[in-house]
Length: 208
Image (cartoon, rainbow, N blue to C red):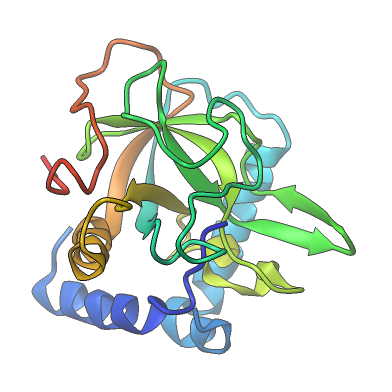
């Protein structure tokens, strides 16, 4: 399961830097990061997606972060909560082998309602990778209070698995920060988009 708690401080700093340059979890600080209107817009967007509206091939913008073997829950593992294609987090980014993606969820008792259904595919343009929802982003008793579910400035938040098991921990963490930011994606994409196949970390965290 993706866990943002240890990364949120650096993400906040990154957001401040991004804002200052005008370029395109600690859950207690989420209002400071997103603002109430941003949360409401994101929840509304996710609600529309969950109701079954036709978004096939829909271009949209999301806030993308990355999680790795080193900061997964449990740490030092590739375990995932909702396996579809993979038994553990992975994928090369092709249409048939998309990268594991974690999304926000609302927990009620022992049940979780995911912001995007398990098995939903995305195509992330600047990574040139397909991704598939197979994991949950945020843990604890109220993950709905965390940033993954609240979103960022009215945009859904998704968390992609970057790998890193065979890479240095610091290098892998830097990889997640490098890809963090607003990204153009295609929801429920068709096959045939350009692909840079391979693990994100092992491939040098390329952004096109």
